[in-house]
Amino acid sequence: MNQYLKKGLIALAVATFLWGQEALADFVTFGSGGSTFEMTFVEIGDAGNAADPTNTGIASTPAGSVSYNYQMGKYEVSEDMISKFNASQSLQVTTSAVGANKSATMVSWNEAARFVNWLNTSEGHQAAYNFTTGGVNDNIALWDSADAWQQGGENRYRHKDAQYWLPSMDEWYKAAYYDPGTGNYFDYATASNSQPAAVSSGDGTGANGNNEAVWDNRSSGPADVTQAGGLSPNGIMGMSGNVFEWEETSENLSNSSATLDRVIRGGSYNSAGNPTLVSSNFRAGRSPTSEIVFVGFRVASAAAVPEPGSIAVWSVMWVGGCFCRRRRARK
Image (cartoon, rainbow, N blue to C red):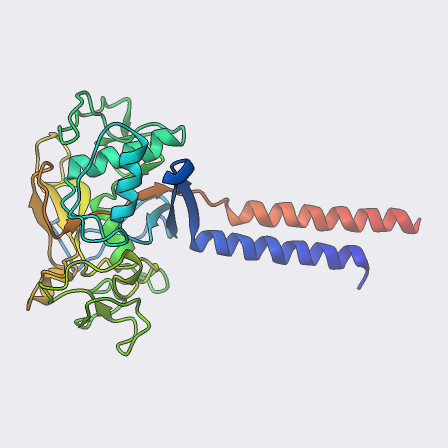
């Protein structure tokens, strides 16, 4: 094999490998100086997937269909991340203070939205949520239609140019239960239709395999975000159990008023004796100002992975260039 063809094939293999790795996880560093932290995002692909026909949610509206690729935080937001957010600007968010690496709870929807806005603005992006007053737990204002998110339907809670946001009902549901390999949905966010084993912490590699979740133990409190139970089919940790999580979407699905209850989903360590609470069949609404000891959140993001077709074209062009150069050399 001549050296140019060999180099071209190596370049193509490396490009393909790097694309695959980037599709699995994207690591982003926020903050500055001693207040930096890293968030891991996982690509959720298969844009335009069908909704879960077995879960009609509210008003006979199935959940889980998303018309675009996006990314989901692999882990829940930790207390350490909130502490470093507090150190980086004037607004202060309080948590349950149970441990730096534990899931941040006692954080209202509004406070979570403030945190997400800072993720955007600290990186030079448009804020996701329209706060017009200064209180850390004040309600948002709705965006005008010209500024509102329009993919998959108008969403006046979220700005169309935001890079980071709280996951919508469909984004959260898809990341938790949708199997990209089969196009089907699981009942639990541990890639299983069977009730997960109850553990106080774990990463899906213990005696129960991946089908384990942090639930049915009111005395345990939340686990570390990297030990929050088995992974969803998309590789997201702790979407069944550990702590309930805020969704961006209002309980009635309209996103038409800042005061509407927001959905919490996923169950928690406090879901004693009731596996339905950690399944796809349960959702509840709470005021956006509520601070609850077993409710936390995670962050979603715009897709940041280049299209594989582009990589293939670049690599083929590189290989082609090598062939041309080699042929010219022979002449």
